[in-house]
Image (cartoon, rainbow over all chains, first blue to last red; front, side, top):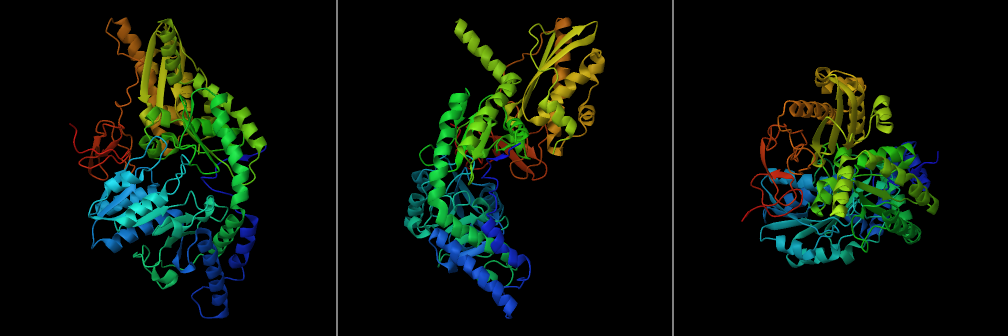
Length: 397
Length: 192
């Protein structure tokens, strides 16, 4: 059975070039970058070369890049570190309602420590209105954090406009670009952001290697206290191989982004246009116009996401869902609820996210495999039975 | 994640369907927490002559419904009422910890159907079934620590010692006294 992987948002495959670049640092080139000797210098040079590549991907200077272990750590570092660095000025934070849990739970931790926070609502497309962010600012606000793109619904946010609002009010602005970096062009100077998170496993780099950009001059306190690594802002011996893989993946993403986008967008659009035609009661979630090039997300009404994922998996197709049942906490997606979807509809959340190499034949295979799955699950769904009954009585009237 | 037996009952569920002339019907759960199950029973000589179900929910919910229907078929009504959540989970070779919730619903739905039949038989007004109220079963886990909340007190997390209220906009549970709902961001302050 051919396996069709449509779960970019969970993890992308590691590029062989990145793997090859990492290999020496898992073997003979094991030195600690902080050591003075030749082995240490070799590791340090590799880390600094990777820093240049990551900086180049987002238009930053190498000295503004801090390596972390994950996108979640980068988000924790930005939110907690910048809030702590500003608390003498004020203790209010503004974030959107659709942020990743690593941002939302960092904010909750800060609330327990005496900060207050405002959640900015989003519209039906999952778009954060800059005017709503402006309305949420108080004289006590010291930090705003809103994402660049949402991984559940694919919407790309108006980050430059939100950054401008914050700059005008002299408030620091962080954007979680984990879902966006490597997939769409980013220039931190043009955007005017103070901090930006990215992660290698979202653009064909290794897991466990990510970074936070912090604009030169923006104040941030360490999340991990330790030695002199990362300019004293992030303790811990560097994950040299991971960082090297991240750097290589960043260089590849920069070189190949335009071609990859050109290849994936028509497939994405075919999915978004055609799936609701092939199956009744399928809603496209997120913005059509401002959308990640690899991202197609839906709510399939009257059925639940995990059940669909299990049947798709039996046919070799990998996808994601934000349904309550797929999360350990049994909560429906906070993103879809914030966008105004009701619980039952949000339960039918399904995300197909394309990767390098996804072909037109894969999308056609999905069109063949998927409708019978929905039909089978609707056949046993009491919600669908009730819908048919209600519709029947409407017709009789 | 799931045992082979769970996957078998999920992929090939037994006794799916609706009994148009059912003697009893029971519906439990709610899409807010992920699962909803409807059981239909046909009773002959105090035995469950036929059992059918419909389920909206995850793999575990579907497998549990299927297993309950299989265990119940042919049993007396009292034997049906003696089918417990633990027995169903054990018969399925175990369920992941966070899915035990689903096994509770399966046996409950069958019990509701049996009660519905007995109520009708005794001339008592059966409980209204069929309507789905999205707000009746609020919040299944604490939004802060993700500990499952008690069925009888969904407005308080014992682990965090936080009190909750229901957001009038999205129906999610959010911390009492907060300025805005943590799920949808709507301001909570003035309720008019």
